[in-house]
Image (cartoon, rainbow, N blue to C red; front, side):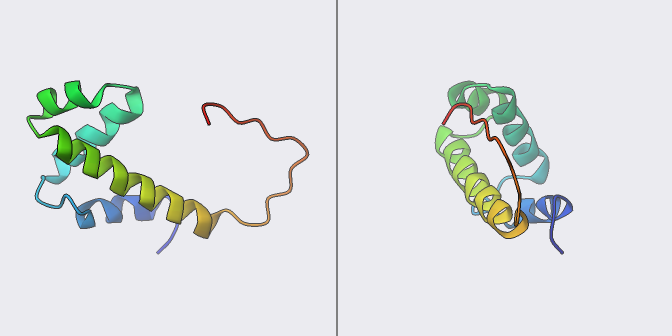
Length: 83
């Protein structure tokens, strides 16, 4: 299976697989909303290292998904923010 729906299947297989799925979803949601890693660790009651490792794993997964799924995109103009 590939595509965005496969991202849900990916969550349980992370390196930080000792955290419950609900906690991992909460952490990733808070990261997407712009919360700091330190505040996330307090709210989710996990170590800042767990947040950091989850962020790295999520980034690797997203890069692999993007590289696999985004092909043959024809564009005339590309804008990039926050590189």
